[in-house]
Length: 454
Length: 98
Image (cartoon, rainbow over all chains, first blue to last red; front, side):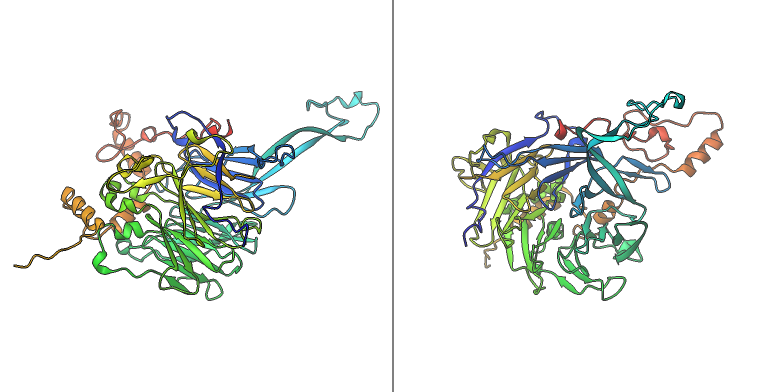
């Protein structure tokens, strides 16, 4: 059906790039998370310096019919600060690991942001008028001498320049011994989960002094530790269901109705491995770095080091589809282990879910090295590699597909594996929930691409 | 003697390379040692008990300070709060907002 749009039917064009041009990247500027809100009007980024920057999409310009609204800075604030836990001799990074938006209920916007230890609920609100004409105060705030007041007046609201304020409304702290990797808001919009390496906790958005532990995989003897939790997410429709992935490449689906502590999974998703293929790297590259449910909740997608897998929730013994992101890296695993790149945690995302884009979760997007990112079309089985680079920044010019030459004679316009820049990694990408607009984060820059409109 | 044609997977080739460079690399592939290290991320060796005991013992003398170029504070040296890398919150706005 038309409008379903495959990864190759969409013509991606450069729209905007945010961030500094210089090559010398300050650590604090490294982008650590990117997330659109539910309407797509707001786009939030978090960085290693604990700061959040929110961009807002401009209203569509009727005269410029060729482009959708641009994203401009709406609000920026310091979400988390570095801490030192003297009791445990533990340094706590301020890096924002995840941001998740709440659905909008009133004029204000709410988001959850988390570092390794503490989750915060932030309220972002607009102020475009202020009261004037107080009886006891001057306009600058100084108090008037009451004896000089001879008449009374009623203060009125007058318009002022738009001010966007961010304030922390809840702080959910002291519930995680290990490092938080995921937060996920439940479909009941009242509760959310936070997951660290060994435990998952359930919170109520209104209650900060209590959380329920729903998964605990800590072994009695830490010497026996073989597996950690790498990601977790609530089912989009069933408020009792969530999944969590592990460093061994498994996904467990749990039902909170079954018991208070969901240590026994309801389903275990695992692809059988040929033991003769096993190598030192097998477990490391099978570690799942991200898990995302499809919009319907019928499928879920997992990202491991070299591939993206689509799982049908009704079939536990193998994925229904596997897409190779950069298979040519399999013969570079030794150096990737030595330079630690093998531990890079790539995220993945689905296309938007509005009817205008596609009713189904059809396209998968994920990042790679050399500032390349990949898209896979589940329908056509075609894939495309694109590059986030300032060299391609001519608006309305369709991005040229890239190709990596694994071996043999390199064709013109191809890049050889050995020329790839492994410091230029795209770990975080996001797709607008309703339009063909994507946000792609390189180390310290945010690129926005959109579908070429005819 | 029969010569067998074996196709060795690229992964096994890489594994052989790694084992050649690091012969003592863990028996358990990628296993618990690496996971335990992951869980220890952020651990700095400041022990307030050691620090206060050392201060009490030495009375007014100076505690042995770490060499200025040392990044790791371990071993015989008793770390002081001053030795810990100062982590101050970022006072600079994000360049994305620039």
